[in-house]
Length: 152
Image (cartoon, rainbow, N blue to C red; front, side, top):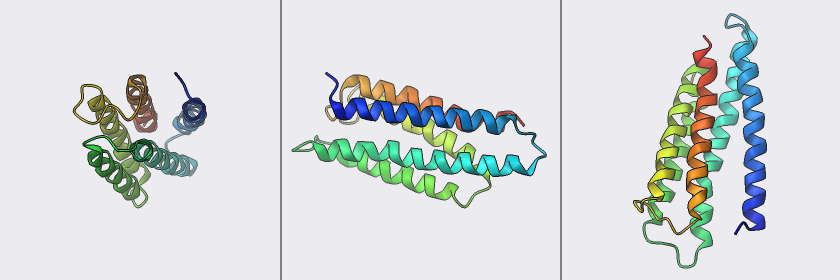
């Protein structure tokens, strides 16, 4: 059963995904030699880094919402901090490097999402469909991050 919180979260992430799609496609259309391309890549990297932190932080919120928290939830918190560090490092990188790091980080986050399903990580903190949906979303966002790099 979908709660109001999950429906709202789904709608928010869909809107963010649509906005990021528009930004990635617009960035990829700008000629590589244009200075506007560098600025657009920087904006895309910054927004994607914020989204990575938000996505990873969701697991902290899910873990804290359970009383008592499921066994192994410390791994989720550690991974969330790791993704925060990855996102923070992109802020001081060249936009192309940042987008590559973010694409890899979103792929890694998808692996973490999938690891919840077979029980390697706590699977009781969210419905099963949530993990699969998050993994698909992460792969999609990672591909969007890499799109401007492919269009070089």
